[in-house]
Image 1 (cartoon, rainbow, N blue to C red):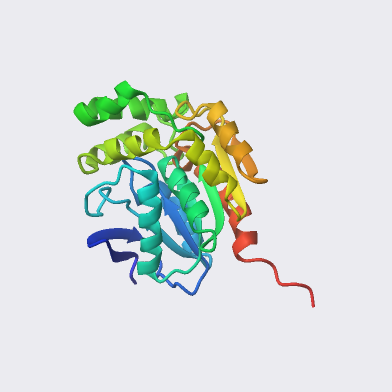
Image 2: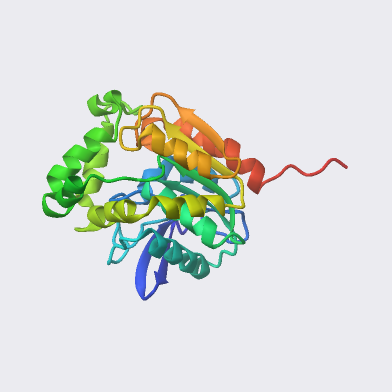
Length: 279
């Protein structure tokens, strides 16, 4: 059974996880887009559930992340265009997009640019703008290990910084730190730069163009995305569904995996697999 796809986009190899099942483009497709410095494993529980319940899952490592070839792209619009070419290579005409942090901005921009190809949009842990402190951005380039220590501290609620994993013996912050450290050099800086350089007015304009159903999932204790930024995104979208996971920091998929899955499942299943009309 093929549990990954090896695609080529713009002459570069792209590693794509499929949730542990064979990828079938005839099924309703969902693309999971991770954040800066991460990879497809950020959505491992959520992507596997959908893959085993009738959906075609694409969870790519973004360029220069995970097992995908460099270079890492440092522009949200460039990543959104890259996503369109990835869908072409996978043979997917339409898909729902689920994005976290940077991945959510990419999903938002792609939904605005390709309204005929995006069936639903789920945005987790993101807002407008996705501001990045200039000193922190410089640290991500010049002192990456220190930047990772700071980032993994900010990204979690207090519980996640102490342990916090629902699997006994595992540490949320430690797992994320290991993933960030293992990423190719330059991936974290490129992703953070893409967030920092994405203008507020560009995000507003993209949100206003979203024609598909949209969900925004907010971490109630997210220190990386201020509440005002989440509210600005919500206000810019036409009639979004909004859910808050009260105890979560920025890393919703790991801190509250079941609750995050429940939010995605409750939103995506009715859109992608609507109940048949009564006879």
